[in-house]
Amino acid sequence: MRTFVSAAQLHPQIARWRREGQRVGFVPTMGNLHAGHHSLLAIAREHADIVVASVFVNPTQFGPNEDFARYPRTPAEDAAGLAAHGCDALFLPAVEDLYPYGAARSVKISVPDLPEVLEGAIRPGHFDGVATVVAKLFNLVQPQVAVFGQKDYQQLLVIRRLVRDLGYPIEVVGAPIVREANGLAMSSRNQYLDADQRARAGAIHASLQRMRAALLRGDPVAKAEAAARTDLEAAGLVPDYAVVRRAEDLGELAGERGDRVALIAARMGNTRLIDNLLIDA
Image 1 (cartoon, rainbow, N blue to C red):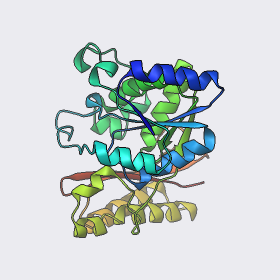
Image 2: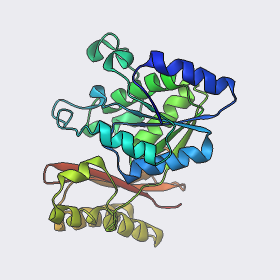
Image 3: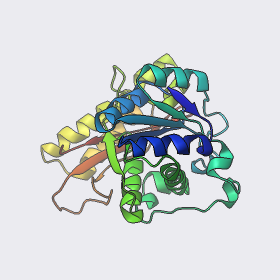
């Protein structure tokens, strides 16, 4: 695996791969990688000849009271894991590569509508930061395909909207959620949980499964949502939301038919966890 620490280093190699007709796949990450991230590499390999991963903790997607400062940085472990799982190139951009005028004075990209609900309503400005850094990384890496995990379902929708609206010639692939033995979605934030909290946090996935079963047998959405909140609270979680929405745009259901998704965000102690489950897939 080759490592590039600047766009100036990376660009000649990207140009060489493209001249050779190699299809470049891209997996952007914020590091502290685990098996869920490594699964994205395998999916990228199915769609591309060359797999590039980036590690960059993006300051513009963290709110003022969020965990940017304590977000775990593990560059040596990340590089070893990427190399062991077949990554061809690691891009470690400097802040000045992505924000040459500083993060506060950066050009900002804002995707309308989608970021205004659920995660966007709770974390104002979060998806502007995501859209901005992803657009910058797409410009620097120039991939033909990019892989994002479905765990961040709303983020995946935002990126698909970004790609279509700005005309990026990039195929966006959504990767299935990788789970721990008790169903808890793998996340870098899981390490903040102690053993008891980690066990009880499995209630998130169990609640999603019960929501799906209730809806498929015809229960009202409001009943399924209320039951999920009760289940989460019984496990010691504090839900921010437990809802069912349209899968295509996270709009509220109004009796129309179409694919649905159940989404949960809940806090276990000081750790905020998110998960989702497609109802009709």
